Length: 333
Image (cartoon, rainbow, N blue to C red; front, side, top):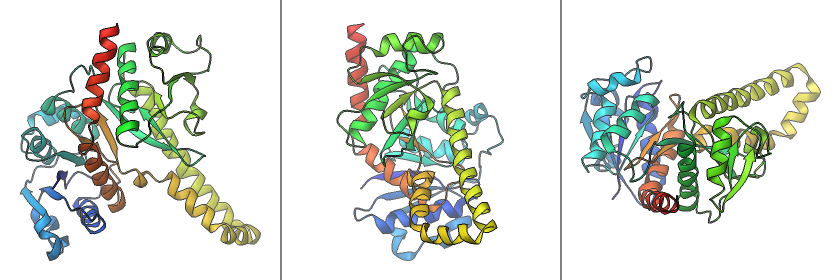
């Protein structure tokens, strides 16, 4: 039975959405798992149905690392929920950790406490993005590394490929490098240097622009964490704004309201595609273990899907795949 450590106190809305998401995951999954909730038992124990209690362990912990705190401060907070949850994986008492808490703290602790996969220079946060053809694209890095070198982005491509093959079961993912034009000559010094390295990958299709992330033409999009994080936050903002604009204009016109009623199934499908809860969380690729970083505003559905993502991760050989391919290309160079 897989053991998933969960920071029960980390989200913006406290422990209840996280615990409810854990219960939903246990309800829906035929093959049960062991959930290890780290947090204040008195704050959420009443949400756990008796029939699921046998699948849940609780580790009492009062110290919660706040979203407003500096990520480096977590290194001194050994009694915090996120520190204890990550150490469960480090010490072999859990297979993976799921957290909707401070993403920087989670990333720093996971990297330092679990270590990196052999050959990995820097871990990267990878996130799924919807496309207009119904498939998904994977963007990395979206926040772990604001300053990168070309060899870091090259390894991000290898890690993204491994995720598509081992987790999403796509044998031949297409890799693109995010730039301000498709031509090899476009981009800054970092992307130009990275382009030269990525030519060694048979899966590399060249530079891609921002619009290509959503049109389904590329599966893995590589960029530095500064660019990727802005891309992620901008996409979330656009999706939210479009939804609000549609609602606002529908209310202004009876004709629009009638059309909306006829199109409600389409709107429902669109909302589902754009909802981050459908993907659960973002894996931190390149660490010697499994850490899924969730949105601070995660609802129970997002937590449920993050747990499923963690289980899929630990049941694959993605870390072995990453190590093997990095060693292969390092030998060539």
